[in-house]
Length: 74
Image (cartoon, rainbow, N blue to C red; front, side, top):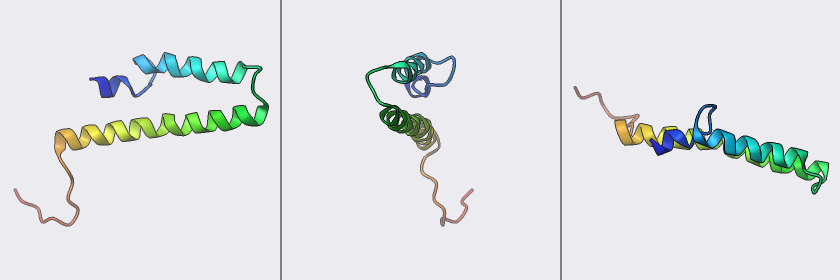
């Protein structure tokens, strides 16, 4: 449940927090434009990698590891 809640998709608990951080950095006067772009880019990469990691962890937890070269055993 916590892994699905941390995906930061709209309607989940992490979405509001990440949205506030994104808006806070973009509207901040403390950073230059290139720093804002760099920080936002790094945050966007983290936002993309978090669901990939969480969903692959859940897949391995519920379905086990997938063996690509193993013969099918029924």
